[in-house]
Image (cartoon, rainbow, N blue to C red; front, side, top):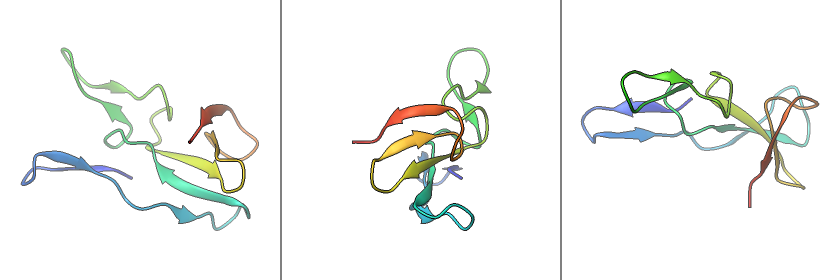
Length: 77
């Protein structure tokens, strides 16, 4: 899951990794910081990952989902 690096002053993400339980899928960072989007008056739950901080990406089709078989979140080009 992505995290804030206070020394560099930016969000750092982890590289994608193969899903342990879902063959053909990989786990990727959403890009939010721990499931939260910052900006405005206060942080809010990320509307892309639902606050989980990760998404699943189908390796062949590049389709993004909250989890395999779950709600789709677009396609990664």
